[in-house]
Amino acid sequence: MGTWAVDAFGNDYAQDWAEDLAQTSNLEAVENTLDVALGHPGEVLEAPFAAEALVAVEVLARLQGKGGERSDDSAAVDEWVDARKAKARARTDLADKAGRAIERILSDQSELRELWADSEHYAEWRASVEALRARISA
Image 1 (tube, one colour):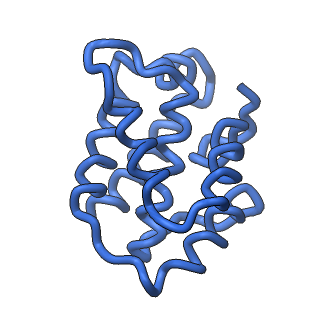
Image 2 (image 1 turned 60 degrees about the horizontal axis):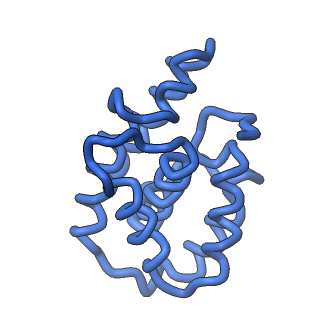
């Protein structure tokens, strides 16, 4: 996986997912992505699915007005959110799924967490994920 930042947008999986999101008009892609991350309890959550789930959670946070820093990497998602923010309605079921997905991503059964744990930037990555969790649950 090409990774260049600790935030949710700084990897190839996130960028590909954001491009696909641009082709949709509702939250179905977000919900499906969270469902994939939450599926198969007891099995290891593969890194691509975890990375995509983090971006899906960012979409929800941004729709709630709790977005993180905007950057070139987040531009596709920011544009999608900006076009839909006024019409977005609260989906407490998705917020709950987002929180549970983050729990799984930070668990011992997460390949993404394992990959970051082996890097010198693990603390920064974990802090970024924890900040996202705080934004989505606030």
